[in-house]
Amino acid sequence: MKIETLLKKVRNATSAEQKLISEILDAPQIFQHSLSEVLSEIKKKKSSELFLQAFLDIAAEVSKEVTISPNLVEKEPFERIIEVLTTKEVLEKLAPSDPLAAARLKGLMVKRELLYQDGQPLKSEEVASLLHLTRQAVDKRRRNGQLLGISLGRRGYLYPVWQFHEEKVLPGLVQVLQELKEYDPWTQLMFFETGDLRLGGATPQERLRAGEIDDVVWAASCYGKQIPA
Image (cartoon, rainbow, N blue to C red):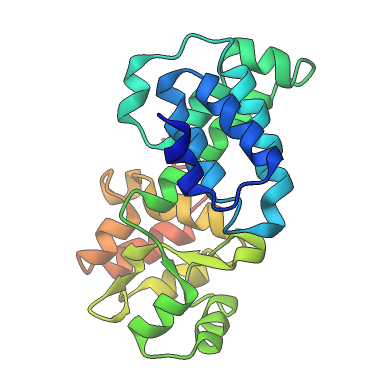
């Protein structure tokens, strides 16, 4: 990857950013694309600039110390970065006294897979357009447990795409969410996306889409409880 290509991604690069670009070019070829994609976000989110610079600085440095599998080229940039950062050599450098560091990073991967495995999640404004509502009405439904939204902090919320069908909320979703109201949104998402023995091993969202609302509501009411032997 030539430096001209990276410079196009970061318009009017500062001297600090050009230093990062040079470090990326020194990183293993298979890791360069992942790093350059993160670098391209610096100009899009000024509030995140310092964090992204620090992240790239670390990633470029540690990527030189590990053997990176050629299979990584087939994975998404986020997956490549997580895999590199969870290698033994990197964890010893980044978190020498934290035995749970790898688990936390792997947890990020699991959460992302849950959120994206059925398709690109929708932003609040996209949900508003789909359901013919205002943005405020979408937020109100989420707060009232009528929509499942995952918080991105200052960036708002993402809504798993499977909960919508023919420009409406998937039938039965509200009833199930009411049964799960004591749980946080990530736990609720895990319920919908995990095979359930009470549903014959199918995921609750699959059963909802098949119209088996009563069965899913019952499974939700039992969530977190031990299944009798």
